[in-house]
Image (cartoon, rainbow, N blue to C red; front, side):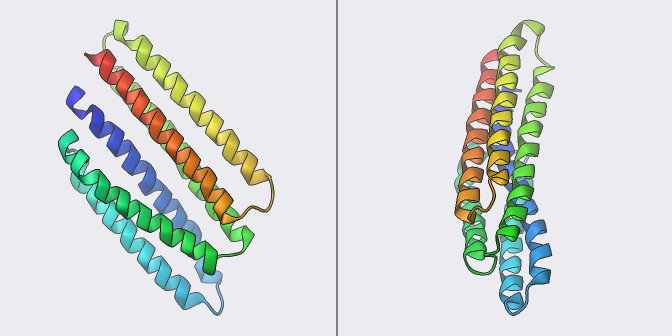
Length: 199
């Protein structure tokens, strides 16, 4: 069980990014259909984003059952693919998708994907913890509780920003970045607690 500890951290990281990509693409597809005058640019950008998402998804599928050493090797490549996707998404909102309504719709969809990632990661950890002896559970239960608390805090922050009114994509994506970093930190900390308890 321990050998897959770090794999869970990486897989949660990759799955969270994949869910964000899918959420962004669903929101953008609706928006691109409504474009006039810049529709071909929007369609080309969608094709580019889908290609990046598909490459990311293929890499996740290929390495889903891999151990720590392989994930250590492929994570930088996946981070590069994620960054390319994020840069193209930012480019979309700085050129074609300048309307606040479009930006807020995408923000809400991506934030919802982040919320699911937090819940799913905590559920995976709890399921893995169920396999441990009862005496080893308190540290993991505390980590799960902290992860859920961090998730609620980030959710409140994202909701506050959403209800603040007109925000630029830079401000919205900055909040998503902050939530993503918090997720990564909480995910790592929780699985570290699991690893320590499972020894």
